[in-house]
Length: 343
Length: 136
Image (cartoon, rainbow over the protein chains, first blue to last red):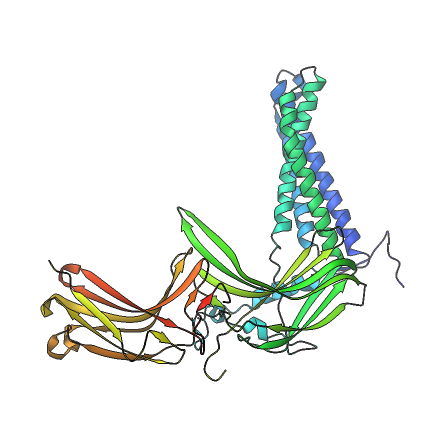
């Protein structure tokens, strides 16, 4: 059995031996420190020039601008490194490669086709039916609604940390020279709080993502029609203890509208009912949680709808609540067709 | 000046249809001189209402000019029919509504236009409740 932690690993092309998580954490710490050191040094350099322009050693010249350039590079490389490291968390090399391959294979003409002729304004189901399941007929594709949150939080953390560090360095300098800038110190407090909160969020989210394995949902038949019942199979891998796990059937309306020069989107959940709920679950590595349930589409359900500015979407939502950690949510879009004569 | 009168009537129906039903209707234009009418357009369409910008799609369309009409008179009663599609069904949600209607638009001399909408509902088979909020 391979040891859980190794100091040395081998690089085999794009693949590496050793723990990916440890590698990612190490990478994030390295780039984070580079960012912090660069931000502190840059702030000290620039603020000293502004606060005490007479100091001969800080007179702007070639050396000064060279130092600014080098330190700015550290801030940029450190920040970009942290963002890229966070973006890569939970995404395998195979998946990245598959995404690139799929993008290269994208048939633009096929994509530009209108909705199905027989069912106008209903989104096509091509991506739903092209993946056969192992236990049931079809495996549903997953859509992570919060995929943007982690990169956005990382950017926010970097910006807040940069501001907090800059304000603290200036404040401490002023305190060191005997003219403390109390207002500036107070001004730094919200940035420090924001920085701590966002870093805490990132650490917790990365922890959850590294513990939760793939979620797979399979369904007995497609397309779905109101009043019909379908078998559902759920498989949840990972290494985590959950306080609760539930699957919801959700319908939401989405409208896009122009307001001045802005384009805004509003989403409203109009139907939400549990398909099943489970309490206290322990998922062990290599032994995924497997459940078979039934899904009933309400008899009076509106069918899925898609037009240029408006849509009505149905989805299955798998939500888990790890003990003392933020919950994870995975969305599986489905398409509901209307009942017509003969169906 | 009196505005032209446009009437559009669905035949043999109370304004509620099912997917695949044949919609029979007739329209007529009054209170206008025949030579004032440049063209008449008839559409059977659905459109959205609510928070979002309006979307519209035409299911059936015909345009008639005086040369297409008996004695070049577009005012006369004109009948048409079309088979309604499977979707989208009429819907009343919270920020989205889907409406169906027949629309007659007339084009007068000097570029003036007028139109008249006659709404109807497209409902799923054996559904008399209308869809509300995803599910009634």
